[in-house]
Length: 221
Image (tube, rainbow, N blue to C red):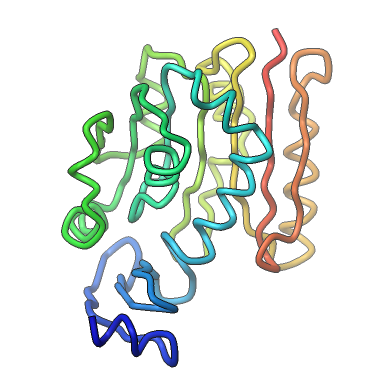
């Protein structure tokens, strides 16, 4: 409790571990809440939770409550899952895919992710999961970073087409991206051209927390 109160004055680190994928994993009390960070960026809770909450509100909480299944690619500490369950009161099935098993251990220990009954966590590669799964989803949330780097496959046409195939009619994709330079800005603009305007409705929410751009994709048919 003392560390939590002191965190309103200065962040208080309570856990740190090395990860082959994320370099460094840190759990910190900041402004009275626990957050999960990598070496250079926020991974869960804190600013990231605020960012993804903006996207979920854009889709509409009422629409999300009525959904049956949600896929989260990139779980980290599970802040978006906590928002779905605790704030939106989503009771359908949530499947979370996370490559870094060390992060899931931290999420279970510090953020009680393993206590969410309607969540199934898959430790594995998101690309392989998307390629192999036979399930379809009402909402697919893509939030995959290795520190401040986004894997190239996320923007490849094959992966994009597969994501769209796994999306139910009238379903949504919420894609969190980071833009740090002009080449990444061009990358995002090119990504948007992969979608057929008659089949998908696309909107972007730029410059959230300075560097993040959310892409919201709605499957019309």
